[in-house]
Image (cartoon, rainbow, N blue to C red; front, side, top):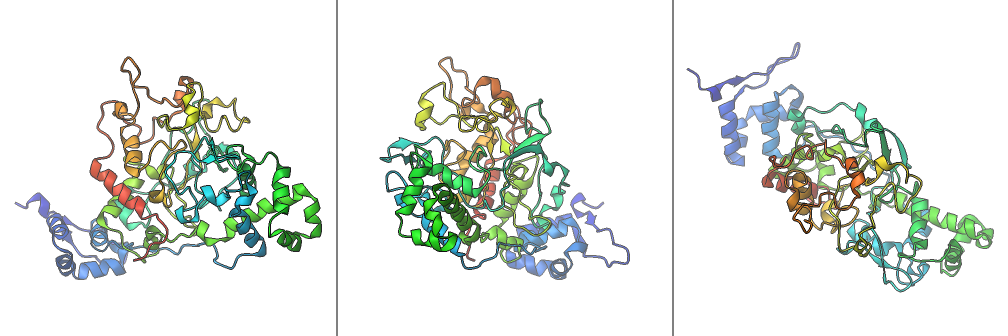
Length: 480
């Protein structure tokens, strides 16, 4: 009698095709246990055939080959933004971006909170930054990274376009270059508007539609660069050493029109962010793996699989990992909004007021959607590119490393006592950073949040370590 592990795995032959090699289940286990050198010798012609003709291989063989080599068997051509010298407008925008004289304190520039050395995010682990005239005013949210915003659409509320995407068969993930384009999401809004999804925009609440508008916000924010008015900004621009460049680019009359001066200055900052490749470098190990130029480790490959698995980590449900159909590299966000129910951060001074709540899309920093209460508690999904380089996470900076972040996703519903504080009576204060009447907005349907109290978490500790290993491959500047 044949042992079950000796069962032969035979591929279905394509019409007119030639058969691939036959590998038994027992042989597969042995192959995975041997050393790399032994594996190569044992696979022999099968491995070579798989690398040349991956489309003809049964899934099991494709998985073995990838586990051995760590290579992407189906490389793609990524369409990166053109790398060219900055235009005169972008050069002007760069000077504005790094100029602290434009702040009320004279010590704070755009780069103060968006450091080029830290993926255009803060260079410290503070949950909020200090600003104002004397750099003593506390902010309300951690500044998000300015990297990878060049494809961000204006804010809108409408049908989830991703719902029409065809999900990828997870058993074929390793041989399909990037896994799921998008996992199914089922809890995007309250039942009052189940098909309407907030998406696009800049800042955590999407209140700015363009980089130009976004650039002006901090200049007049009293807890940031703290200019009293746009006229104050215009006056400071006229005192800069680069004012002559405004005249050369926009004409001499620009200096006598304050509103136009500000508009063109912010346009220049936006052009700098679009044209300078450092804002969207696409030089991570994952990018090179997609192109067949780098190899992922076993842990990184397993982390990628879990990242895309809609029944496990389900990260790809919001952080899309697959290149677009026209070859644009993934930016690891669907640019939509989610209410995740992260715990309140007592380190934010505003949170000392028990009645204060930051509810994202419906306030307090935008008021146009205050009545759309089905969106209260929703915040923009950020890119995960360079996520391993960040020092604070989520809209309130409550966590400081990726292990804490993954534990939140894994344990929020199964062991909430490990995530949230308890009140005087010992009751866990779940979703304590959102008023109770909006708790229904929090996603409890999508994995890994689809588990109940006491259930086994979606991920093991080893799973989490592997997912983090994969996320580290998203950091720019990879060198083999």
